[in-house]
Amino acid sequence: MADALAESFSQLSLTTPKSNAAVHAKAKPKRCPTYVPPHRRTLFFGYNVPTRWVWAYARQNLKPRPQGYNEIELLLYGMDILKRETGIQTLDLDEARKPTDTQPPAHLIHWENEAIPILTICSSEDFKYRPTREQVDKLSGILENLQTPRWWTSVKSYDY
Image (tube, rainbow, N blue to C red; front, side):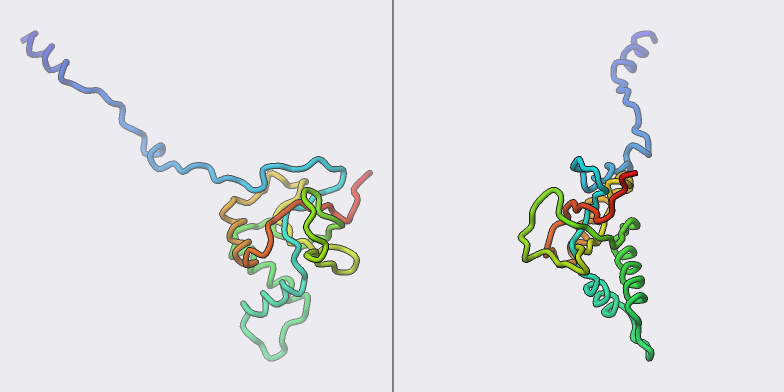
């Protein structure tokens, strides 16, 4: 009997079952951007997008109505549609005075009222709320990959 017991133990293979959570766990999504350049002013990470582009985007995605839409409504609806389509809840429009990390050709920068309009993904102030790489890629696709997001220096100075 002792020999049979020893033999059955030798044939026994012990493995620990993997937990259900470990099997179905997904890798944490990569956040974008991963680096904030040092700077005294607030920095915005995003695209140089004219306000009229947001208006046009809203017009193509909204149902027409008899009285039409004014510019403020188009801006608000356009931003809301972009947030829903990309999942980037920190998406905003801000103004910058210059690019920070790279120098795009001057003819590619759109200016409005002596400032550069930026479709902001996140800022250096709210860096922990960065979107995922997939969300940024989705926004780039909506913008037809005409440019890549970059850091821009804010017009406003918050030196106290």
